[in-house]
Length: 98
Image (cartoon, rainbow, N blue to C red):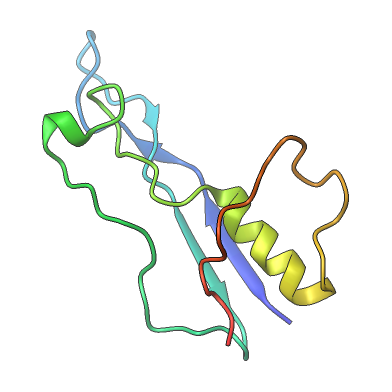
């Protein structure tokens, strides 16, 4: 069994033209369970420098949420559900499970 806590909600790091911080990136994901290799933070940290931000305003995506969910599905069922993520080609596993 595994529990996935996932949020794609974040705030922009830079204000928009009206001075607000619209919905942006920088969400989080946690995977919990007996066979999870825990105690680690996965993904690269690109930093907050202007040239490292996506479109100059958002945190760059470190891990596509589909990679996380794909790995969980494979762990639980031996394969991902056909059509779960159309067109998605999963990268090498993140190593979430032992």
